[in-house]
Length: 129
Image (tube, rainbow, N blue to C red; front, side, top):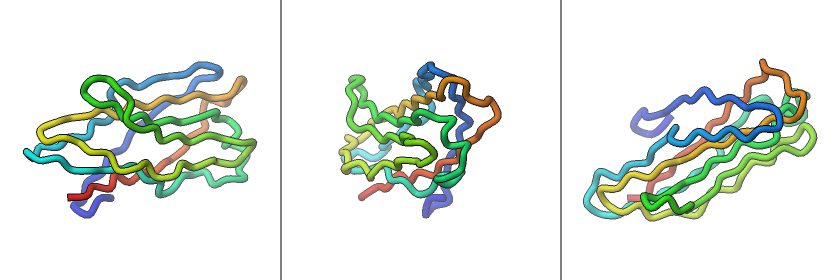
């Protein structure tokens, strides 16, 4: 939860051998007239590494796109066996004043994936003022 009690919850699906793209699940808005910087940072994920359910996933990717549709950062969770490969924080990105960017999400499950497996991710959006 953010310092000002802000948070978001998304229910995302992943399908076997198919990349599913959520084209506008999250927006980052700067309602100020001056630029601010922000980054994405991993906080937690469950189930924990070592659990067999993790092998159900191939990736969960977050892509920050600017107003021109240009990728500004990728924040990608990948899997090796039953281990999450969690992303490092993105570099700080400059969001111009009175601007809104989109964070796309892509998911993919392995062939033969079970349909009832759930992953819970907590990601921080750190803003510098």
